[in-house]
Image 1 (cartoon, rainbow, N blue to C red):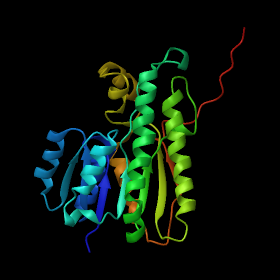
Image 2 (image 1 turned 30 degrees about the horizontal axis):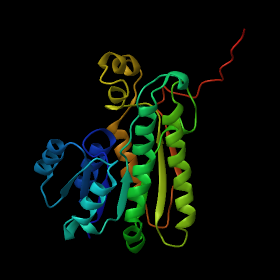
Image 3 (image 1 turned 120 degrees about the horizontal axis):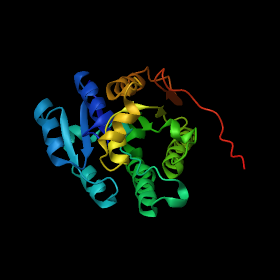
Length: 249
């Protein structure tokens, strides 16, 4: 029996790679994103029987609900929610950071995620489905300039544990995946399109790829239904946790 996944941020990075992995495994996918042309390309590549495009800004709760209400019958029974859409903006220290960027990260990484999750919980409970939330090692290990981005990802991880507790006995599985360095459009978005900054970060570092993370998402989603991975943290071999800062003077 074919299953259905709803993936946010499906037009690039982890989301698009996950979509490709699930479609290849016979799933139907509701592909959510802001970029209509990219969504249409995914439909053209995989067919409308496998991919349904849901074009909206995830921060727009009304547009989100309209997209859910407009799902075709074949895509309404969502078995898996992958909350992947998220972003980091800016690298400034908190005392120089943009409040507008802070608010956009909170609206995207926190408010939109909980809004969509709340909307789909009745279906996921009825289907004994699964939720995979994409967090980050930034929510566990602080670093200069991480401030609100790290805070939003810490929320995602803790919210996921809370969901797991509340959904006890329903059969719904909840997992947080917390990646470290992975080369996608992430740094380009964070730096406002600075390709040189992205190149400096990733060159020679052998970072993880979107396909690596998609494979982990698919693995978690296809485990036997009596198994739940609560949190899964992963980094490339070249990355590890650094020490404390000490200011002298």
